[in-house]
Length: 573
Ligand code: ADP
Image 1 (cartoon, rainbow, N blue to C red):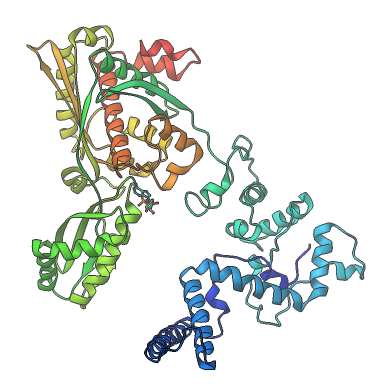
Image 2 (tube, rainbow, N blue to C red):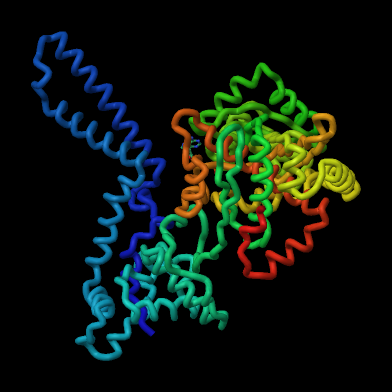
């Protein structure tokens, strides 16, 4: 087995473990203090000199030796401080130099690896060609097997060796991207190693045709391929006088066809309309005091309107899009749960709100030094769990969407009648769900549509839990002839920037809806628009499924579309 020289291990710069500050001779805080002192001292000195020269009518360009020294010190400390705050700048100067120094140390070992990389025969004795295991001897002694992987050019022979090292556990699978600097190659090697370790084939899970760079450090770790999910289009959805073709990623037969039928019923009835009632992402840390009294004092402090301005100033400094809207507290003994709500522009906002909350926690520590922050998230937020707090207070976008479906449309398109729909809604979505003790589940299948749109548009699918909270209402109107249908969804958590929204496929689906990326004119309008589309599509899905149930068609149509390859276009008619 071929192993690479110990010293070469640091040749490849691993940004995750190496920091520019590691290369400094003093601890970072001392170096920083030193340069800050130099910087401000020379600035002060130069200003004094300047004033002196002006007073004495000495030309400014006439410099003494100490002036020159001060200017040099000024430039040096300025560059250091600039570099420190732009850490990548420092890294670009220091790391290559450090790596260069190490490589210079041992040309012989380096040459052996180069021969290996070039697949050249070794000029030395055969045993010498087996590049020896590292022997502890230098400042690099602590480097483990993961760091022993040099930056190698693509070569199946070399890759074969790397695969073997991964299989043997000498190279952690997670380190492949950083060691190789090639995300696609890392995924291919990991995939092959996994197949060998598990003895199971991954044939069918594609590897090619995906840009692994786009998920690095953002969407998925240790990729070995990607799952294909078909995307169907429901629509046009006529919503607030605009038409949308709604992308739905699903493997549930009938779902797109059914939603499409609902869209058609809405379209021919004149369209649906929606209102965004609230737009605020939440995060709720849990803090502990020695007494319930102290916890209550913080609650009163946080809920006092006089303190809100100061708190929002601190909170909002986290991002130009984060705007604190409210703070709601709940006490359990001496523990306090603080639910911060803020608008987050076009981002779904979890990162943003968490940063703002962290700022406020740091600020509160000065006023309440006995406050112990147990967790930045104390589940009173509440993220990815079915909770009453989201159902009642809302989280993300709270949307209501309605339509009036004409009597003849209910008959011709939905193949049922208004009376049956209203009765079914009352007994199923309202009473039935109440009997089941539902929490936000007063609907037929909102989560079907929410999940499909979430996956297609790069939302966090786990947030389908609260995003699918929905109450569907149906009522006979216009003398009992037409149907008023509405969905009220208090917690639609969507964004059009960040997370999976920037990936190529998901971004294309957002583009189709006209809501890709950040809205330049009105930050937040793209994500709010997306939330209304989700609600509109849920409205369509509810109409269609409820009609199928009312007409007793459900089992029949599922048999047709889940168990056959037939053309589905007839389903939506
Ligand atoms: P999240 O908070 O949803 O996890 P991210 O933090 O991943 O989202 O992405 C939000 C990032 O996008 C922030 O850095 C923010 O500054 C940037 N951004 C750019 N334009 C906008 C916008 N219109 N609305 C919100 N964020 C934006």
